[in-house]
Each structure stands twice: as structure tokens, then as C-alpha cells.
Image 1 (cartoon, rainbow, N blue to C red):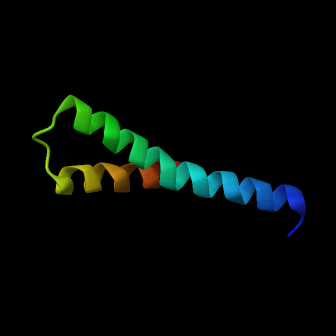
Image 2: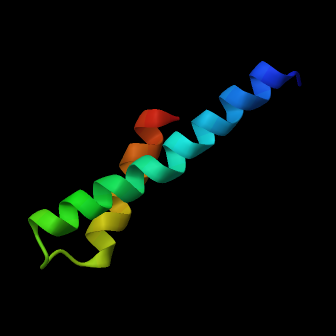
Length: 51
């Protein structure tokens, strides 16, 4: 694996792991009553969409 490939790989990992967390934070601000199971499901959907 060369440098550019490893860089792309790091970016993909960041997108997959950081994007769902940001989404969950936004959702929690919108509806504080939402429980953790709802946010967990949205995180899975985001990962599927990105990956």
C-alpha cells in the first residue's frame, strides 16, 4: 500500500466513524427524549450509506 492509498483509507475510516457520531449529536439536540437504541440504529444506517 503506498502513501496515497493509506491516506484515502484513513479518510474513509474517519468518515465512517465520525459522521455517525456528529449525526447522533444533531439528533440528540433535536429530540432529547430519544433513547440510545434510536441513535444506534441511525449510526448503522449512516455506516451502510458511506461504506
